[in-house]
Image (cartoon, rainbow, N blue to C red):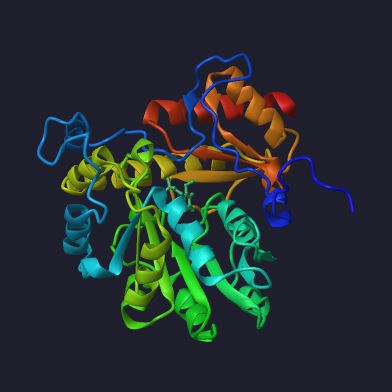
Amino acid sequence: PAVATRPVPKPWIAAIHPYVPGKSTGTNGQVLIKLSANENPLGTSPLARAARLGTGEGAGDPARYPDPESHALRGALGALHGIDPARIVMGTGSDELLHLAAQAFAGPGDEVLYQRYGFSVYEIAARRCGADPVEAPDRDYAADVDVLLGCVTPRTRVVFLANPNNPTGSYLARAELARLHAALPADVLLVVDQAYAEYLGGDDEDGAMALTAATENVLITRTFSKIYGLAGERVGWATGAPHLIDMLNRIRGPFNLTITAQAAALAALGDQAFVAASREHNRAERARFVGALAALGNHGLRPLPSEANFVLIEFSGALTAEAAYKGLMDNGFITRWLPGQGLPQCLRITIGTAAEMDRVAAVLRQMAEAAR
Ligand code: PMP
């Protein structure tokens, strides 16, 4: 047999298609208004910005390692959500926690299940630990409980469900989530990825928090990247039964949250007025944007129902998603066209400021009318 001349990657790693993040510059490097990564258009709470600068309390000494257990932050999260901090683990963004959950509970020979058009990190997380990714068919872009359950096999170890889901914006209501959980075998981990949950309003709209408290096989992940406006600080958290948290703690990086990230997230948590304002802004602007698209009439642009801070638009008329993507870019906006995720007919647009959404709707209208 031939001797390898360089290190040979594990075949399951070599099979990974890299995650493609939302861009902020155009093809000529021009700076664009970024509506491609579901960030907060209101920015960051001034309290969190001040805490990052390192003058506030908890700024710490950069020569020393950060608190490996993020005590203050977990305590504040526990107080806000009514959770024992022992049931909380922090991650370098919720991305890290999704990977750790897959790695802790699945491996070669196992299956990791999620819906088609689910968050694209799930496939990478499955492959990274050597498990087989399994995509359940969607129902009009959304997750369907019966279809998901039909894909469960004796090899299924982890089920990922983003609720609301990115990139579709679709949402599984409380009764449906409960039905999914009730029908899953007790030894299958259900990860409810709630990156966008705060946009819904109530703290436990889909009932996942109650499920984690009452059961042993549900893990919730949340993030400071969206409504808290701290995507750049990389702070996520997970909550679930202590034995689940214990496993994630064993394999996470011991100092996975920087001093700055802990201080900023703690301050952001203390500014719930900013969170409420962000939620209200999103609710109002999303409704206005969807209304503007509906007013376009019969041009084949269909905004899918969204509970998140973005809208996925399906294009079936003379104006294609690709042409709309390029036209918006020519007009200074970067959005997310998703051919790599099997959605070449769709464009995902993050809800921006009121002025931005007016302009985006106007550009789409001009293009749709010109294409006819
Ligand atoms: N889950 C979903 C559904 C997301 O859309 C995102 C962000 N794109 C994440 C998790 C990860 O976010 P972060 O790592 O910034 O917490």
